[in-house]
Image 1 (tube, rainbow, N blue to C red):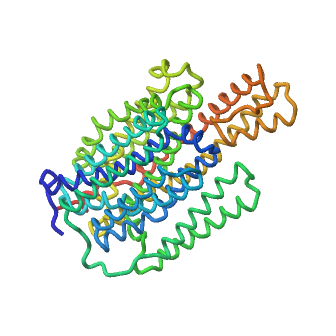
Image 2: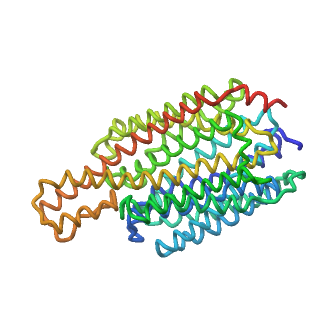
Image 3: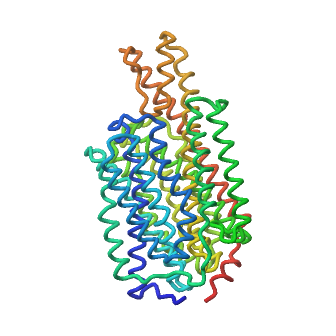
Length: 516
């Protein structure tokens, strides 16, 4: 399979089109976190509704992204990439028009299907098209630009939300997607594996989708009905069973969507374990940080988005060079140090209590975000290069699909598990806070029931005057307690990701596979 130089016209068009399409998906994710408070008010959504709006997309993405990568390898990487972009922008337009939580969840599912076909295609096109010597630099460039644009998502989301235009977070995907489609149509050649004649693994796709759906549903129901209700433990058990069946199918399949032989490489296995733990912590941390800033600390949604600027600046200045250095020195050191530094950033952020709002930003949130951004800047490009370099070009789409699936599966689990934990932490803290308040049992029960809305919790209308102010303060204090616990667990996951790199990742594997 012929490859091209990164700086050649063909190489540049591949980079621009893949960056545009990837950025579209990543902007959607980060900007949505920032507009959630506005969306919650506009659609009268509960806390559980918010997690379903997030998870509907992530669930379909995680479930189908493996088969999306495999379809690209078999049917043509550009063709499947373009199909994914088309479905994604149609889903985005429908999301922007959705008038209820239910419709928004349905259209987020459509977005997820498009994303599953689109996201593996970007890295697969780069990995199979750019020559091996420049692949790390190309992936670093992709990582830097997509992350910069992605981190611009919160700023854009905040500005639109403050203007009452949160729906445009979805509409903006349409022109970006159309531009990427035009470039791919006219400037990028098709690439596929001509010798791959086996069928696609639909049983595997169905079983992993069902497994993840049941597990997510179970965790999302726990805060409302408790762990010992059959809806909760029955769903969790069914999900685990389907995941076991999925592994059995993959072992026996002639053409598995997740070839288990790839995991014989300790570097590939370690990189995916690192991805799972680090991105679970990062996803939960960023979500609860955004909610804390707007709903408790008094930031506007634009100000909340601007708090992530240090992260963006670091990604601009460091990520690309980290990819180039990983080509020369190997990614192992970066993948031990980066997640550990990111974990330290999340830990620093966990100690922040009630502040005086944006005026305190530089002495409260800024240091933690700076350290988190530094850690992720050292991690993103070397991690992607490690995953793609640990397998042959023949499996580039599948490898990209697996690693992206790990990122999205971790997001599904983080949103479901951390959402359930946050409500439990919030409820426990709230019960302690209102112990000494003189209110009747009925009002106390209504106050506790608001815990499912987390930072958007409101005192019952029957409570007025001083008691209302006390309850509002109790809600804020309780949310900060829940936030602190979530951020510390997220930090621990970052440290655990670094441990995975220390144990499993070996530079020698990558050097062998990347010889021209």
